[in-house]
Length: 173
Image 1 (cartoon, rainbow, N blue to C red):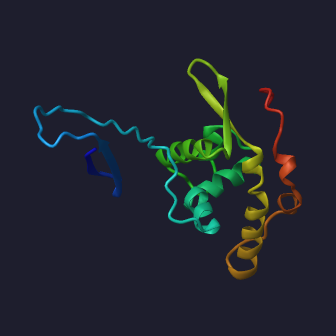
Image 2 (image 1 turned 45 degrees about the vertical axis):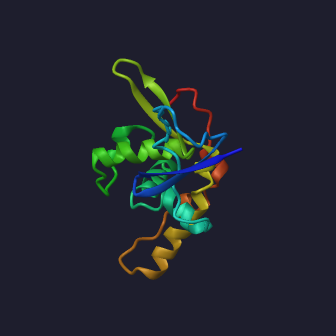
């Protein structure tokens, strides 16, 4: 029995992918060449974390400068696109759309339609997203203690619990 080994190298999003094929029963003398193709389906939404470090992975998911602000706004009962745009930080519309999509894909928020024509959504924290509340609270406390220009977080915010944020989203606003 003869074996042939073939190594393919692909590049996707600056990542190297190697595919190793071992073919059995290769005839020593090639009588015909057959063309074949390999289709690799790569989901663009497949997470690509920098390392297995828990902090690094968390930052890959929510470490940009906008995601936690969107989550903060949801803690303040903001649910609609226009609500998020009205926040004082002034998130650009294209970034807001991207962040909402990313947070939904990450399981941190869910969207539910509130209007069909034109189709518009409200966004709500999932249990996974609500569990970010203590992180946000501690960041706010840290900033207040260590950054002189930073205001104090409101007491209602500090007293809120993650379970207070996960509501029945039946459409009532």
